Length: 120
Image (cartoon, rainbow, N blue to C red; front, side):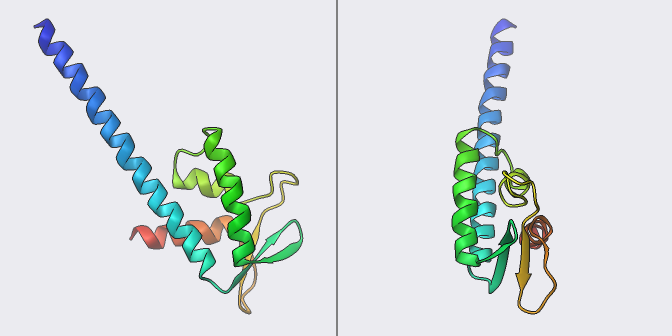
């Protein structure tokens, strides 16, 4: 009986590790897509009152993402959006995205909308 319990616990640990790896792979794929989507857009990105190109925005958000990842603060794509791509860490002001002649929207909305579309 004791061996069965040990075997059961080992199987749980192994399946949990596999599940975590799958989730990490999915998260990385989604985040790569969001970076690519912004990079390939003709949108502009507002950070602390100044407009930047999509390329400049990707560089800034990627730097912020790497920092948060090293600190262990990103465990999901939603956390990436909320912690790295939504607002200034210094001022707390929301980032904005403007595509063409459209009115600017909060970058958190822009990224969450694209994530929903990508997951469909």
